[in-house]
Length: 332
Image 1 (cartoon, rainbow, N blue to C red):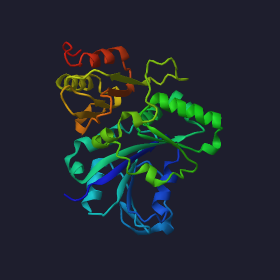
Image 2: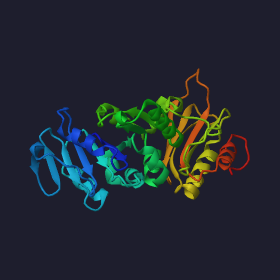
Image 3: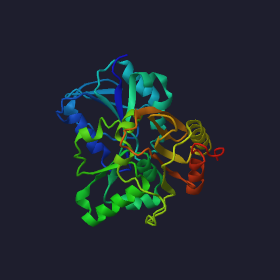
Image 4: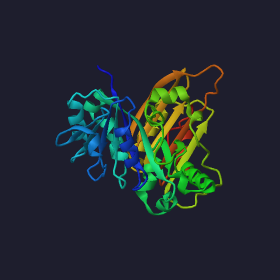
């Protein structure tokens, strides 16, 4: 099988700077060939001088990149783009500013054609530093775009004070403790920060470990967010070895019952009698997991799980998790 193409989902509320970033990708002489897919409501505003060839759906830029528009179904658009045999370094999908990116992310877990030809690399969310705190108070979509991301780009930092930026970053950490945060002006982020993150690669999760992820915190802390978005994170850990069958059954049952409210989940589990880490990630009801990477001799075998979602019952999650300890009773 030929090399699979990495896919980055780019999201962010209206006015966050997605179009600025996309135009830079399509116009700069970066020596790479990207395919940029914009939603049908997007206003990419492509400079005609940058277009080398065009047909009804594709715009080929003079730097080698391709831009196309979602016409109806994203899967059909992706199939058509990949079917043309383009030699892309990566694909970038922009969601509409009012969209929940969850269904886009799930696409790459369920479509076999896409799984053979490309893979989900990361979800990057642009943040408007001037207005984000207001949007978090009145927009469910803005909160979900942050909760599903693995990279948060706080854009337009020249329109906020340092104190305001620190407050924004603290609020983002409350919503999503798994995401890295970068600051930018006019979406001037280096593309190497956005692409090649491997955020949905469970092998990479195992090699990096959960402790390297920014903002992971114990949700029992007393800090309360300024606005109640309904989305929170719950972090669980245990030094005791887990029963592999029980933890698998619990996670599958939990996501079957509560997956609509669980936006993202990630974990590394120490299983009794197993030298490798059990690594899992989930997006809503879709769960992926495998044994990846040996525990290092000097490393404490500690299980660590993080759930991000709406209406999370921390006590019930902790009870279910602890009942999966090797030798414990039936899973809750």
